[in-house]
Amino acid sequence: MRLIVGLGNPGKVYEETRHNAGFRVLDRIVQTLRASHIESTRWYKLYDGRFVSERLVCLYPLTYMNRSGIAVRDVVEQFNIDTQNIIIIYDDFNLPLGSIRIRPGGSAGGHNGLSSVVEMMQTNDIPRVRLGIFNEKAFSKYTDAADFVLSAFEPDEEETVITMFQKAHDAVLMIMKEGIPKAMNSFNQTADQIKSTSITKQRES
Image (cartoon, rainbow, N blue to C red):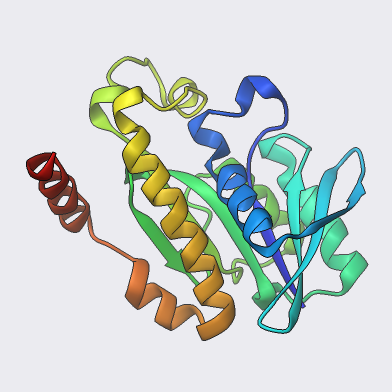
């Protein structure tokens, strides 16, 4: 059994923000798998589905980002899920917009949501899919990172964002079907590769 977690903040005011990228990718996965809503508490919303004959649950923490680990811990204990069968999907300020990084574990890298999960689960060895949200031009409008991550994507970023969300969706399905190493080889890109792809799109348009 697997647990797929999208990190974000609850409420309409946060829906379209960069910090809710994890929620938006999880929305796509829930739709693809036709997962059924099975439980809502003050801490989370939970959906149940199957993929490649394996049961999985999809989790939206409702605790706000800094306390995401509470919901993850509760669901892990409820279903007795091994930490290696968790996939955390979240935004990453340290990655360029449009990029994806899949990792089997590691530090939280300053992300408060993942830090909360690591603290509650007492391990760094939790697979994750990181979504690049940084755009220097967009960031220049803000005085600090906290305001930036709670901002909406710019109109001229939307095409890149939608492509990233779909790639992240595909990456999660590949992790479940073929494993993390194969998914890393297929989806992890360098900053130069992201830039090259962006330039190619501009020339084609």
